[in-house]
Length: 582
Image 1 (cartoon, rainbow, N blue to C red):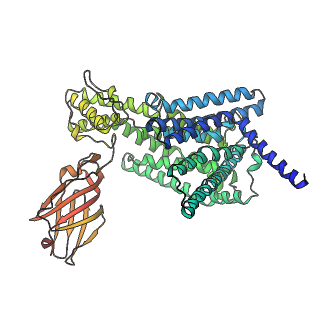
Image 2: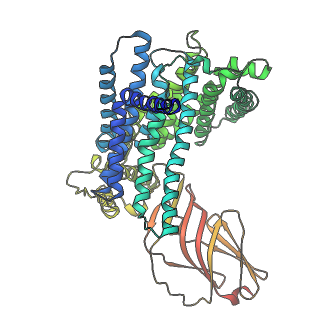
Image 3: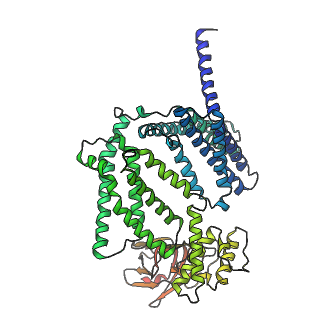
């Protein structure tokens, strides 16, 4: 055997040894990935109930993610203290994976927010090795390595899956070889759920003291430094000034913060923490603005947090807790803790708690009695029962009760407020849900037809008209199709006679004008009713004004709630008589 052949065989053996090392390091994670790949292929072949298969697939993906976090966390502890053997690490990974799977599989009983759980578990991967030690610089180095490995894995997945798919397409086009569509789906599932993750796992470093990976002498580090000093810091400071000026305005005029101020403050907090985690180690204090930002950023938070707290207190007091308000309150608490930690020298400037505290908060908020959904169910149930048990109710209280009941229906929690003797269906189809909602509402002497289904305290409503229906066009001789109007915008619709109709939404009226006349048609009350959903059969709505008739066949309607609901958007078909506009 030649020297060149021997070297080639040595190289292949080294590659096999690296893959063997991945199998020995992450056996539990790979087992969960194999199970997820198997279930995905069953789902493609439509074997078994689809809903259960999807739940199992998501549960297995969460299990693999949780097992990886546990493995990396215990590896880091072992390297620092050498007190945990490989068997204990794999047992911990198996337990973590089982917990992740159970949180998804039993999501109805645990009221798990699957998307929040998945996001928290993914974010936990780089954080886990530094929960019990390490440094902020090392955490930054691992985060960069994992991100780079993910990009390489994504490129590898695209090349492998795309290359094989291109070969199959070529065989089909050039030689007439029939390739079933399911084969492409199987290929995508195996590469996305098994091969790409294996490649990514192979690139995860075995050591976690990666402070040397956070240097300023590399081009990427200098780019991040410029991003932090010239973009992030100035914009965050401008954002902070705007929020402080708004707070001063509320104080001077005696007004309370608006409901939307909570989302603005949350965006400010997320941008601030993200900039600190990513850019802080690369930002130098040579510039006065950057130096002031790095030294005094905790003092930017108290006033915005006060605005957020006041806005949340008002909304929760009026409409109860919802998952969105719960997460805003959790974010306010997280930001307050991060700012408070800066008063301790040990944690000052350390980015590990800035990343770990939000991740752990998301994880706790994703399931269980302390979670966002379970807390919201308790709040809306109490709010509903408090209203309906009153001897007399005004229309506003009735609407709030129906809004709370609509939320409980959406999360399958109607049984919590059903009076004794009310019959609820366990079927999850839309018809059965509507029947159960109506049954509970009528049992409490509420009219379900006036329900706000967009959510508790929702500021918006929308409705979609779908299905097929025959509509008589008697009395009209011209049809304007594809009309799509938004409030404030003028739509021009040319007629066959050469005239141009201009259409505009104005609150609860539709303004139609031509060269010779202008009419404002009052929209029917049911069109601006504060409800959302799907009407299966579109209908012809006839409007009359000054002897002129106009027909509407709606496709979508949306608007804003308030004392007087208004339309923000309307699409559909408009019917007119051409002689009325000449």
